[in-house]
Amino acid sequence: MHPRSERAPLMKNERREWLKFAGSALIAGAGLNNAPGFAQAPKFRDADRTKDKIVALVRASGDRDPSRIRYVQKIEPLLIRIPEVKARPDELPLMDYFVGDLLLRYSFDDPKYVSSVNLGDLKLLKLKREELLDLSTANFRRLYPNLKLEHPVSGVASVTNAGELEPCLMLDTRYWEGESRRLKGEIVVAVPARDALLFADLRNIEALRRIAADLYEVAKDNALSQWLYQWKHGYWEVHT
Image (cartoon, rainbow, N blue to C red; front, side):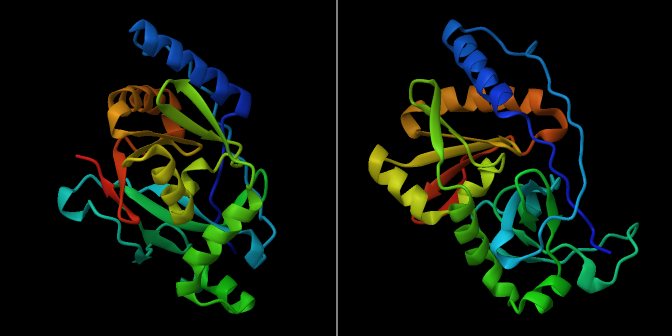
């Protein structure tokens, strides 16, 4: 038995059209409360369970207790208990704390489906638990090498062409160090949906905040985080 995660992404063309709509509405000063939602039809399947397919999905913790929120990034294992699922400990999904209300869930990825990584998989693949983060980051970089940036409004970038796993890019330190140098300033990221990552420098944070908030609303079950995250000294912090 392998407990499975699900991915029901918005189609790329839908995401692109939504971002164009969001940009136009923002420029016009219009609200997006009537923007259409998108159907979320979950699909299940075991992916190819090899170590070169492991990625770290960014997921919402669902925890709103301020005492348990990590305002500064600290990635470490999260103990999983799923009372309603009858599974041995080595069959439970491997997850890490991340930052804010975000967690990391390690999964085997293919273009359309994901299956959770568990301790049994690590044993079969001869991997150590502490190797997962670096391996998943390297795999994501290799699996999705042709990232694109679109600009719904001036000063706000939207990452696309990342296999509907755009928030995973938060883990790529090399990418954000490069963007910090390019923009010559501190970067703030929004991940309002499981397949959306937008960023801007501090000068354009209000435009980023508005687009992200409206995208979070239309994402419905695909929603991820309402918070913004600032890149500082090689790690993320909740932007307050």
